[in-house]
Structures are given as structure tokens and as C-alpha cells.
Amino acid sequence: MPATEITMSEDRLGKKLDQCISDTIVKGCGGLLIGSVASLVFFKRRIWPAFVGTGFGVGVAYSTCEKNLNSLK
Image 1 (cartoon, one colour):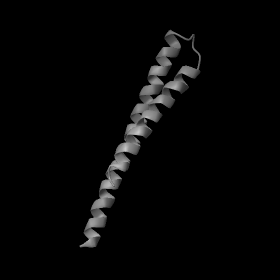
Image 2: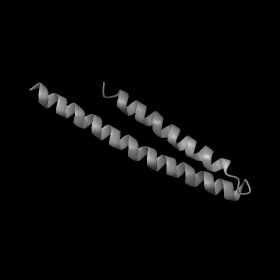
Image 3: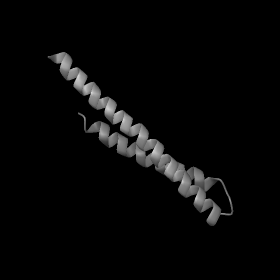
């Protein structure tokens, strides 16, 4: 019986990590897209808004992932 519980918890952890990876990719790319548009429209084609947008997206994804992984305890 303990082997079944370990497998189930491993499956839950794997599912949460998969969600974290996909969430990071989606939010990071979304931030990059928003930052790039802001760069083209407002900042005369500077590169820093794209980096800032990507950083915000990855930061939000990290925060969400941390909250989801801590809920497994």
C-alpha cells in the first residue's frame, strides 16, 4: 500500500510541475509580447520594455508555481 501512495503523490507533483512549466512559458511569452508592443508604440524601439515584460511574466508564473507546490504539503 505505501507504494501506491508514493506513486500518487509523485503523479500529483509531476502534474503540478508540468503546470508550472507551461504556465511559465505562457506568461513569459505573454510578457515578452506585451513588452515588445509597448516598446514599438511608446519607447521608440528600445529593448528594455521587452525584458521587463518577460521578467514580470516569469515572476508571476514563479509566484503561482510556488503557491501551487506549497499546497501539496
